[in-house]
Image (cartoon, rainbow, N blue to C red):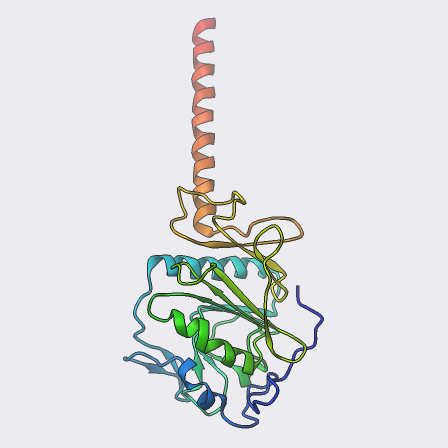
Amino acid sequence: MMSDQPLPSATPGTGGVSRATGTDSGPSLARLHSRALYRPVPPVECDDDGYPYRDGKPVESTLHDDLRTYALTALRARYAGRDDVFVAADLGLFFERGNRKALLAPDVLVSFGVAQEHKNSYKAWEEGTVPDYVLELLSPRTWRRDVVVKPPLYEAIGVREYWVFDPIGKLPGPVVGRRLDAAGVYRPVEELPGGGYHSDVLGLDLIVHDDGLGFRDPEIVRGNGFRFRDPETGEILPDHVEVVAQRNREAAARQAAEARVAELEKLLHQAKS
């Protein structure tokens, strides 16, 4: 579900990048926000136009990978019935045509009005829009950049919502959400009275594991984490691993019950004979 609020073209006063095309319309935002850019780690592979799309980025922690995988698969499943929602994880986002250094690599991005299809990278001028939603998961190596350095750039290029989830305990709370107001300025997303935070862009709530909502499966989930919740139905968007584990437990329970029934029928048959 998307907000009816008009989409701003850019943060006032920056010159910056047109949200509609991703093309340069003033001073280079990549130059103004160079500390926020992603720098590919050698060895680097590039497409035919020279834009990098694969590098030697070191593997994050298993917790980081689990959270990113959950967000990717849960959101793709959520929008599987639509052909105009693109969801990706760890994909290069280029926001200035011709500038191969104008690169961000968000943990998760969601873009409405863009088809879900294979991409080596996300080039805003080709898609006609920058992503609507970005989620970054904090890690010990880069958490300060995610919290302090990147938000002004995401604001300037017009990403409607920028979210940070902290599984490593660096922030006072695990969730920080920012949403563009009518002037194109990020404002904090306030916590819901019952816990969690609502995303206008996704039409979903983001809730943490330890908020007492009772959806955590201790046999599967390890460490701090989050889930998305449908605020209309209260349904928690499931994790694929949890779904498979639950199905396996249910199948095992059915087999055990069927075995008990078969054993009872055998005993009854023996008793009658």
